[in-house]
Image 1 (cartoon, rainbow, N blue to C red):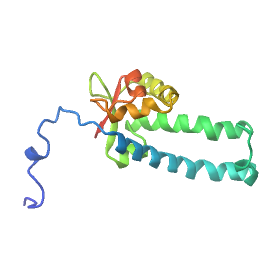
Image 2 (cartoon, rainbow, N blue to C red):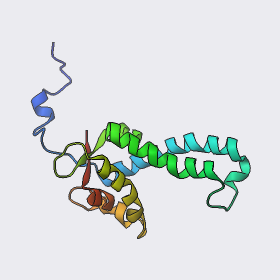
Image 3 (tube, rainbow, N blue to C red):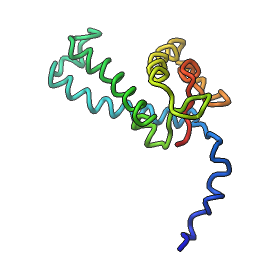
Image 4 (cartoon, helix red, strand yellow):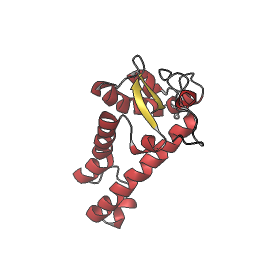
Length: 154
C-alpha cells in the first residue's frame, strides 16, 4: 500500500545523475559537528595524560602523545572516514558526501590526502579558501578545487 504522505519516486528526484551541491552554511554545520566529536574524544585523553595544566600551557606541543592526539589522530580519523564512507560524521548527519568532481564517483585515496593538506591552504588567507564555497557555482572550497572534489547530497 502506498504511503499517502510520500511523493512518488519520480517526483522525489528529477534527474538522479544531477549532483546537488552542499552550500556554505551546511558545510559549516558539518565542521562544527566534527569538531565537537573530535574534542569529546581528544580532550579527556589529553587531560588524563597531562592533567589540567595542559589546557593552560602556552607550549604548542607538550609531548609525543600530545602531537598524536592533537595532530595525527584528527588526520587519520578524517581521512579514514573519507576513505570508507566518503564523509565524516558531520557530513553524514547533514546527508552529504565527497565525490570526484569529474566523475561524481568516489575520489581516490590521493585526492583525500591532498584534500586534507589543502585545508591549510584554504585557511591561510583569513579563511578565504573556506568562504569560497559561499559564492562558487559548485560550492567548492579551495581544498575541493585543489583535490578535484565536490561535496554533494548523498
